[in-house]
Length: 277
Ligand code: FES
Image 1: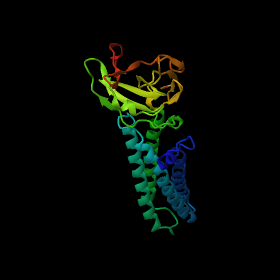
Image 2 (image 1 turned 90 degrees about the vertical axis):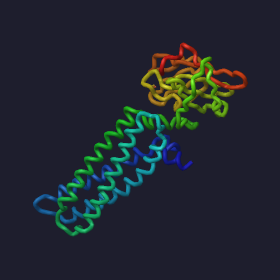
Image 3 (image 1 turned 30 degrees about the vertical axis):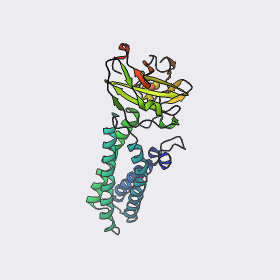
Image 4 (image 1 turned 90 degrees about the horizontal axis):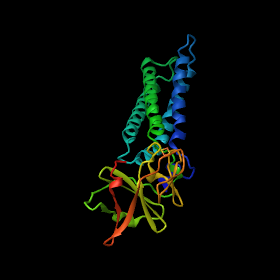
C-alpha cells in the first residue's frame, strides 16, 4: 500500500520525477546567487540566501530520493536499464553528500561578504554530477522505458523472469501458472525465449514477452478482455492469436499453446517458436 503510494499509483503518475525539480532548481539557484555575490559590490545577504537555497535543496533531494529508491527496487534484475538506474542513484547520492559537505563549510562562513573558493568549486562539481545523473535519468525513461506506462497496470507485474528447463517433447510444465489470478502475468525464459503467461478468466495464454514494436515488456502491460496493451506506446495484441489489434506495432506476436498433460499445466514450445524472442 505504502509502496503503491510512493510509486504514485493513486495519482497515475510517478512521484520521483515530480519531486526532483525542487532540488535541481534550488541547487542551481544557490550557484547563481554565489556568482551574483562575486560582483565588485558584494551583498552579504546573497551568501546566506545561497546557503538556505542549498539547505532546502538537500532536504527536497532526500525527499525525492524516497520514491526514487522505491522505483529503483521495482526494476527487475534482468532489465537492461538496471545498471543505468544504479549509476543514476550513485551519482545522486554523491551529489547530495557533496552538498552536505558544502553546507558544513558554508555554515562556518555565513557572515562573510563573499562565498569561499572551495564551496564555490563544490557547487560547480555538484551541478556537474546532477547533469550527468539527469542524463542517465532521461535515458532510463526514453531509452529503457523505466516507469513508462507502469501506472496503467492494475495487477502486480512479475519482478523476476523464471528460467524453466527445456524438455525433449517440447512440453514444459509451468506449475506457477495455476496460481495466477485473473489478468496476472508470469514471465518465463525457456531456452533463450522469454514469454509471458497470463490468466484471463479461466483460460491461460502464452505469448512472446517483448512487443514487436520496440520491445516493450508485455508482462507489464494492461489487459482488456483478450487484448494486451503494451506499456510503452500502447500497441494492442490479441493474446489468443497474437494479432495486432492496435498500432503502432505492425507485426503479430508469437503465441504458444498452453496444455494440460498428466495433470500438469504447461506450455508447448513447438518448432515454430524456437526462434529467440
Ligand atoms: S514497444 Fe510496444 S508499442 Fe512500442
